[in-house]
Length: 172
Image 1: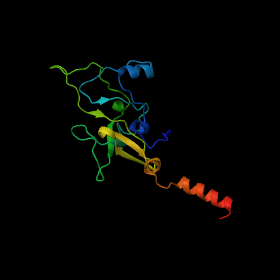
Image 2: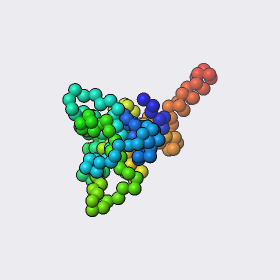
Image 3: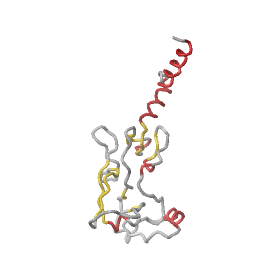
Image 4: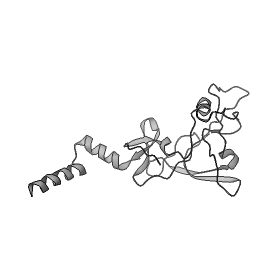
């Protein structure tokens, strides 16, 4: 698990599987063309290379919860919420990436829903938050508090350690 040592970072840092921005990204990273886009199914830009389930379905316990308009759903505290995602193992092992130039016509229906990539469990000092323009981000609570304290001029634990070291040298 490679967690950025930043106060706040993108949700993509929690993804369990590779996420592809588009068909060109898929080809550049896998060396293969993406499977043909199927407009009858939801857009899916990630794939589970080895879906593990004894049944034909697989459930991923943590995926960003979205409403009917595909907007992130806040929990009771106002933070972004997660929910389980269940799909067939075949669907889990395949991407469904639309062409970059896809536009709606009378003959083409563009799915409005996109499957979010499953994420790993949050660490004890992480929380999901709504960032700029409502984009979901991950906050490292320890580093966030330190950043806020530094910006406010508050007394930090590192300040206490420095003063204790000085006091020890002075024999106080």
